[in-house]
Amino acid sequence: MQQDIFEQVKEWGINLGKYSLPRWENLPLIDLYMDQVLSLLDAYLGIYSESTNGKIITSSIINNYVKLGIIPPPVKKKYSRKHIAYLLMVCLMKPVMPIAMIKLNIDLQLKLYPISDVFNQFSIMFERTTKQILLTAYREAKAYDGDAVEFLQKLSIKSAVQANASKMISEKILSMYNKPVEK
Image 1 (cartoon, rainbow, N blue to C red):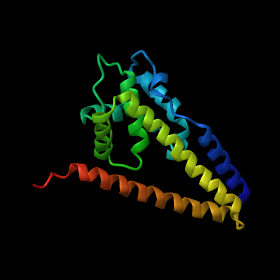
Image 2 (cartoon, rainbow, N blue to C red):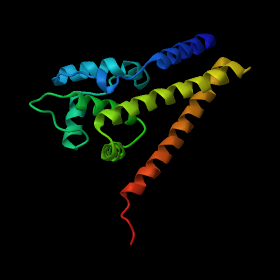
Image 3 (cartoon, one colour):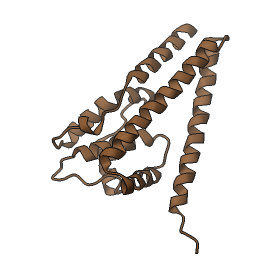
């Protein structure tokens, strides 16, 4: 049983390491209705929904993001590739960052670069970071001479600690942009 758990996690990690987010150029050129957007996001993010126990996004969540100004409103109930890019970035940052910080993060990038560049850089960074973490875990697993389940339990805690530390760093940096400039 213990080896089965280890093999399942290993298989999931291999699949995750092979996965890549679409690039701006690969996002649909035609505008989509809500049900099409949801299907597309499920296809793009399906591998991540395994770890979140269900749907990553729903139509009501998208509607709330529009109301809150997190994403631009649809045009005649249709969503463009710009909306898809926003939604992918928001969905992947939401588990570790408050929505206000996600908006600030994206808005700051959009002051410097067009959405196509922001999205492509996000996708590249997401993939590289994921692969780097998986490679480190793989190396540690190979070097570990104890029980496989014990290793996975330690890896789980380490991953949570890393996620929290990264979250704190990101939020600290972003909070500095929210402070009024002292004279």
